[in-house]
Image (cartoon, rainbow, N blue to C red):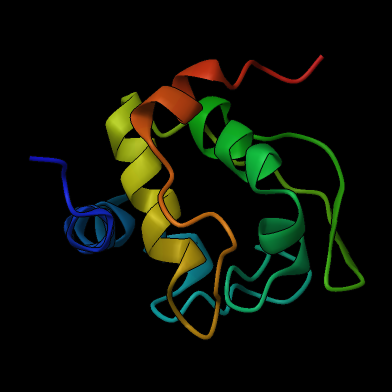
Length: 120
């Protein structure tokens, strides 16, 4: 019997919500709104939705240097949260499907996260 992708996404999002609360919410806020010019929004974020692999990279390895999100430049350091591949996938599934976000990718998997390498 094949796993139900809808159910897998729901389970992943539930785990991701808990991980988000413990690792991401202090900076990106409870509803993903971020802090203007300090911490980028995740809600309705063009960066997140147009470049999900870069978002995975940021969660997996941390992020330093300027990025553009919804036309605003953010140049702060995001530390690597130390999550494993499944946890990164769970957080991505949660943020890609919350606060008005809707992802083309139905389910981010640990295997996809594993294939994402650090930025050059």
